[in-house]
Length: 96
Image 1 (cartoon, helix red, strand yellow):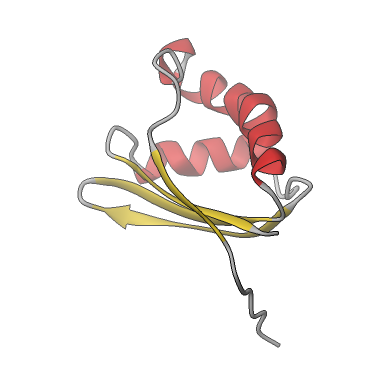
Image 2 (tube, helix red, strand yellow; image 1 turned 90 degrees about the vertical axis):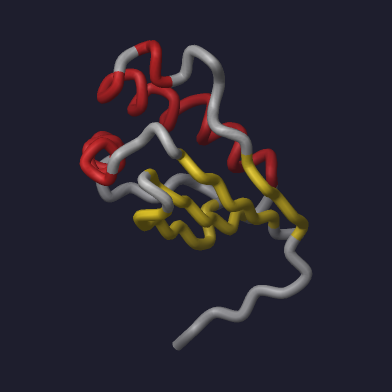
């Protein structure tokens, strides 16, 4: 079953987000269905849909953590990632 989350990163700027994204290169992680990011309340809001929560956790604890620490430094993940609002996805409709 697919899994999704919304995460508000009030301490991250769009410039920092772009640098982290550049570190990840244009190589979507295994299990990612959809990733979106935009400006929200002075920070960055991320909305993702994954094939499973486990797929996201593997990415978060591996490639994403490394990219954030490279761009922002170890303090970027010192307190762990920002909280997420997650849900199991009942239906996914893909556009043409």
